[in-house]
Image (tube, rainbow, N blue to C red; front, side, top):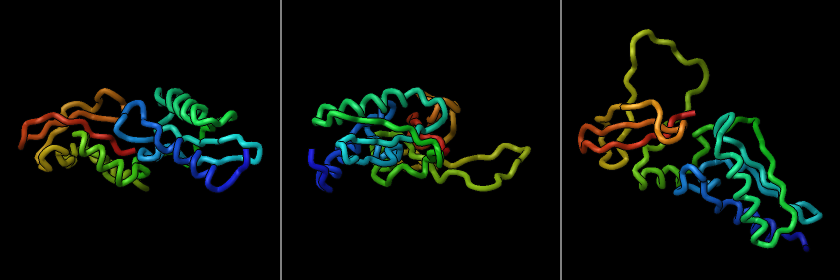
Length: 168
């Protein structure tokens, strides 16, 4: 295989199109977990992934899916690396990914917390806009949803339930 910039871009494009197993409306590129794709001199495609959190159960499937797609595209040697530093943050979800979440009725995360976080003894009320009607009159009904990275909410305006991707 002749290594050209075009071939390297092709390998990257293939890896970028792999859907996330837990949020299939997003690609791994939309989610921000696909960190890098390189084509080495010997023709090996090296894709680097970062898990959304330690122990993410979807990581094994992501690795297998990227390797399978690249192999199916004719790349004989594929290596998948796990990159833990810096850790993934929901800030890495692309604008396209956030738009896709909203279009599928899932509230995208806000900005991830940074630096010192104040500790309060009284409960605080977060505002999460309803992805269906846009109202901020919402309430959290469960801290956990179908996956540990999401919580369940209900809109008081349109009365519809929805999931929210937690800020990490």
